[in-house]
Amino acid sequence: MTLRLGVVGHVEWVTFAHTSVLPGAGGIVHLADPWDQPGGGGATSAVALAGMGAEVTLFTALGPDVPAAAALERHGVRVHAAHRDHPQTRVLAVVDAAGERTLFVVGENDHPTADDPLPWEQLADLDGVYFTGQDPRTLVLARRARTLVVTARRFGSLVASGVHADALVGSGSDPGERFDLDRLAAPPSHVIVTAGAAGGTVDGRPYPAAAPPGPVVDTYGAGDTFVAGVLFGLASGRPVDETVAFAAGRAAAALTHAGALPPEPHVDAAC
Image (cartoon, rainbow, N blue to C red; front, side, top):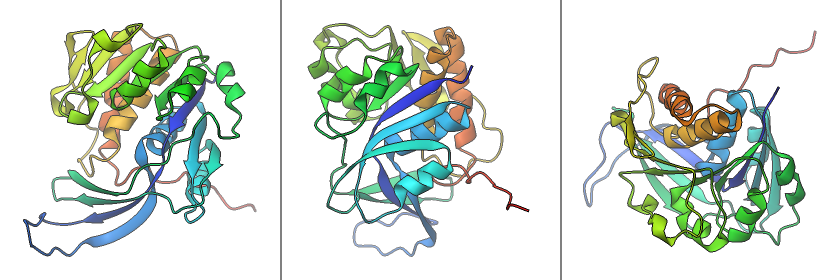
């Protein structure tokens, strides 16, 4: 049976480019091979879930100036986007020779809110939802799904919502993903903390990272792909340890392609 999964979160319009070295203060660097595509936690995780074989719906907010929805739909994602009358948030992602990315985010991200005229009632029919939004009211709506996974980056929204998450996922190295479980009305069923190439912990137990299936090209999106794998695994009924192993493998595979999204699926021309 095909899983029906949702993502509530933001989309950024990302310019990727390569450099051999990042400059120091006052330096000048020339970026090579630039290209644009949608990224951000909402877009990247939604496409990752579609690549795992799920039927995916993204609830987001989009400006009028970029073709983000069309690009995501080509990857198999159904997009429900609230209209914003200002340009989409821009990001410059600079990738060095080792594949590590440095991000420059221009402005604030746009998130959908419960006041936006989106089909929020559809969340109740989904097997699972990944929340990387901002409005606690949309998190309450997302809790109607059978499985709910929340990024620790939105821990404040989780506290304000008062809902129970099936999994809280955060990065141990990212100050923006720190959390204090004592602040929650209902603790999550599982707490997963990632540590990159060192693996991480699940409910306090260590788990190993997976080896990439090829050369590391770009680290962008590996974390979002990991969380997508957690949602897919839990929503499909896998035990949490098996889920984390599956998610780690998906994250490792994401390291082997450039940018936020894998190459677009090839569609043969009609004869």
